[in-house]
Length: 117
Length: 110
Image 1: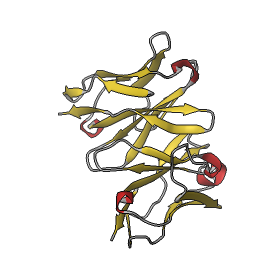
Image 2 (image 1 turned 90 degrees about the vertical axis):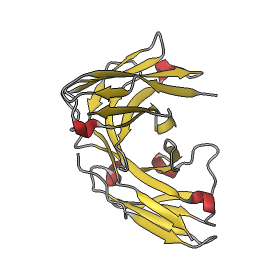
Image 3 (image 1 turned 60 degrees about the horizontal axis):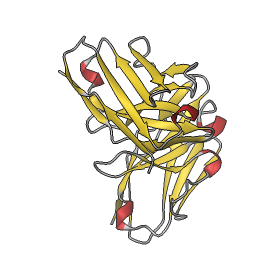
Image 4 (image 1 turned 180 degrees about the horizontal axis):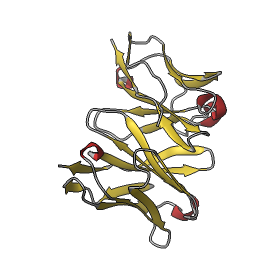
């Protein structure tokens, strides 16, 4: 079964940095675009960032532009999100999810929790 | 990032039909339509419908999506207790060059 597993979440102070990861298994990772989406406690979903299958195009949501960087290592089938200048409002569960052609947000990980406090 | 508009809550009876709406503009919903996701309490979201109102494999045909202008809709027929969940719409926004989500609708099956 195809799986995405996020890791690297934890507690960080405001202004700090954290890198979270999303490892894939049984997925042809290099043929999928990948997104990061987060969900603050008790709130809805917020799209954060996208990276194309080859890593040559990225786009970001306004709330994280200039602070977060999405990247990928296709040789290891891992997606990353480097989060800098963290704010209390970045506290959320962070999910990675896939895109292939018109099939967007098809496969999701279980999420990793980031607490900025 | 401007979001899509969804009613916060909808309540319907068992075996009834619920229609959830998602309103955007010509840059997002009106541009390429919306995707719909279901999120059960304590679980990650699950894709129900994607562009051109297609259903991923394994999704019940009780779920159907449609679009009229800048408003997308998700219709759920024969409501079951397991349909109680939060439902989110999302769309690519060509002016923002990014994805936007609706605030979500909590569906209660009475």
